[in-house]
Length: 609
Image (tube, rainbow, N blue to C red):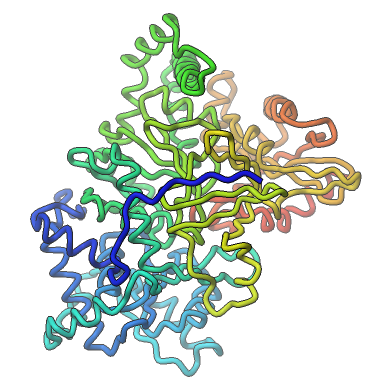
């Protein structure tokens, strides 16, 4: 059993809560731009003074409507400025925020409203309002509950948020302060429901202390990102996800300007106009950025140059990593020369895609391929990979600008201890670990051991305290021959190929290991252009001998990581895409393995026929 810890850097008054972070920013500099809001004429700064005024007005409306400290309020919306505004208004009123993903089904909405006891729902637009209304009208679980639904957007009619604020004009500042200060660090700030890949989602009780202590200590841990001059970030991940929400509070604590965009179609344009200095990105975004750059190069007849630039970036970064570990002297003369050449010809265009000002990116939610991490770092976009779960208020480990080891998820954040049990399971104790699952004592009894949260993930700690994720306990396959197979490393290596969007290793109770492969549409276009082939649809490509041969090469490379008994002996190329809408990805773009295995049972059966 191995263990690593990082000492707590910042402590807080036990009687304080998340809202104190906002009031401190207002007191320190009322004119500081805490947020930037996109409108028809571009981005408009929202100062600390203005934000506190608007939050207080909405909070008074909630109080006038009967909200008591500790009451739960649901929010169902894509990422937008109003999400943040409502979140802090709920906290100022003493309430507990219950996020609901905007992509949630009616049954998921019903369960979360029932389990959380929410009596008010903020819904983004007419479509969300109608969905909630239908759930309330048809649900047996909610039939005796009066739930007030507030629409968050504006369609030319009197907006619900303004009406709510107007309703609270009679609430005194003293009454607002009584509600705002009612919660302490140990009290619940939010019920965040897990994605529910199996069974009903579980409500994680995230406390004010979880959010506030993580925020304060992350700022002290990563000052290069958060305390740089004019620090700003654009959030495009769902705020219903605890990682995006934790980063929101971190930015508030640092005074970094926080922007919102909920539209994937607008992302590139918004990055160009907002010009963030750091970004939170999930691995799939990195993969798409790299594939998109390769596609542009192929269409311009510059595939050779881009390939050389890619190799130069990866080599340069790997040599930096080797020097940091003491295994080398760093990039040599030839490597530095080639890197400098492409830093004039190729890499600036990639950096411009992110707005041109990004100094660091943070990757979380799922493992990032080592080649992608090296490529972006070598291209001047350092990637700091971290690790966490909903139950740890997102980050419990992270790489830092001065302590980075590509392939790892970093060292424990301040106030956190990571332990790897004898069976390889990662255990966590620290400032971000949640209070427990809401109204679920059976789950709580299973979740903790010796005061540590059992993550269900498998990992390794090196002598320097860097954690590497090796898989998920429940994903470990046991073949008919009794061989234990961890799918993660195999899938990650296959997914690194430009043709592959996702790979799912199967073989539970089977005579050998196999895999399902879904194709990356952009990667397929690039591959066809590079090989001077006519464009193919995924359906055509799934049966194409050349495509299958290329994927076989990726499978062979993956098999080089494991023994013969663990190697993939057969694979099927699917003509389907794994998406949010198909039900095979979570909102943070993680694969729902059980859903894939269930829905593609026929293809799996044919692999063993």
